[in-house]
Amino acid sequence: AKIVPTFGQWFDGYVDQLTGVTPRTRNDYRSLHRRYLNHLDPLPLTMIARPHVTDLVNSMDNAGRSPKTIKQAVHLLSTCLRLAIDEGHIAANPCRNIRLPSTSLNEVEARFLSYEEADELVRAIPDHYRSLVVFLLGTGLRWSEATALQTKHVNIQAGTIRVERAWKRVPGEGF
Image (cartoon, rainbow, N blue to C red; front, top):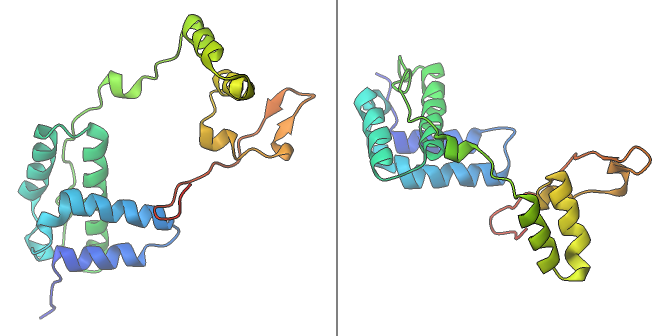
């Protein structure tokens, strides 16, 4: 008889064997696991069922977690269990067809500054930062994108910039 790993054992191996991901992504997955999935750790993979997943979704929702966070946790659980299917440990993914809370418009809609608000902000900025703030406001670039720009990304004649990179924060390494 084949020994079925517990979810905790399986998850550790799953994260360790991922390819094409950054150390930050691994840390993010481990953090999601620690915060929302570790109650499943003692269960053999074959014991994880749909009620475990619906309880996870409902408890996160009742605790006020955002729909995005709930989706991330369930997606991580689902992809981890998908590999368990591929490896022959389980026959089906209990995360399939689980209805997740919908994202409200407030969480998706961006709020832009009015002209008056932008003008007030620019006037409040010290002179030596003002050009940068006007640039960020005018382009919509994020700080990490703007500070990663190089001269080769700027075409003054065409009045364009190409955003090809952005800084990523790696835990433990600063920014």
